[in-house]
Length: 454
Ligand SMILES: [Fe+2]
Ligand SMILES: [Fe+2]
Image (cartoon, rainbow, N blue to C red; front, side):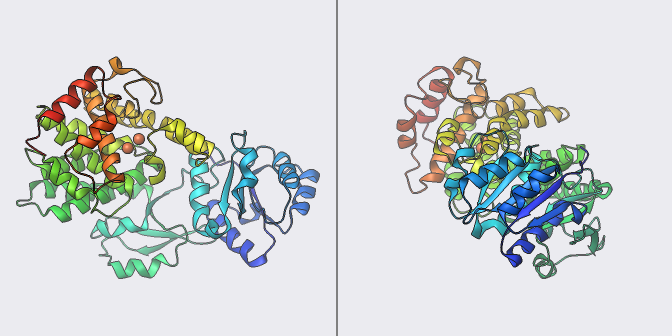
């Protein structure tokens, strides 16, 4: 992807608020001259009418401006995506589903959410990549750095004028307090590595995982932590440069370590009891726990081979990896989510395509059983054909896909009501109709009747 020369227009009345917004946006754009600032929407409309500037993004404050002016500006902005900062989300309701994305941010959350919002618009192709994606640098979220041990690569931070400044050297052992010192100075909360050094960085993670794989006995708490942080690293790397062979090895080793932690007889009760206690983002913990729960269910129905555990755990690792927000990973019923009005059109699209993206990632893996691809592709399908993206009916499910769907339903169910009994009764009562067909009925029966491991 090559960055096009596209400008940003910022329309905010208050000088200090506007300059803070501009400061954040400068991180996303090479040339700060490409950000135009204006104080009023009337001025912006005049400017847009008079000139034919090619804006990729308009950020403006809606306080006190009428809908007609808002509409005029969006129309005049032509292709530009619009981020509306305001106090009342209703102002954007008429633009839901329109061609250009119109995103609402509440005034209080603008400074926190702006970078994330712009990045997600960029990654989804709704606005051009302001910051060239093929830059020499690759970003990893700051909270993942402590796991890296002695650094295998120089670490940089991005400063206001778009330069990358080295802050830690290769070989440095970085402490939490070193990181804290820098975190406050980093508005985008990302540390950068040179792309050509990324391989070394991942290589060192592979070694850490491999040595953990031979550890006896396993320090399970530390290992859990390593797995979850590696999930984060893989996610950041994959979203920027794709599933490189090194990223694949990190994923596979994390999966093998998860299976090793599970042991030969994955006990559902232990896994489920742990479920609520873990910190970390939902996507990370959800993906790792889903793998464990799926293995425990597989054990219950008599599928007890290491290769089955591997397929299920790898599928769990990959299935939501392209989703950037926990909130989106929690959506089970896309139609309901769409109707609720809680999602932007772009987010709905992101959810709709994430199973296909995960399948594409699975396909890129070398020597991975094709069933992993099917499991992730089908993880939001439903036995009655109401799922997405394809609306498959029950006969198209592979047995492992069906088990994976049940495991995910169970994790979501328990996550919402952790204090409920773990006997499955309530869960299966709720799903009675849903699972009353084909392979789902068989699996539900097998899981329900074998209570020995609960
Ligand atoms: Fe999921
Ligand atoms: Fe998902």
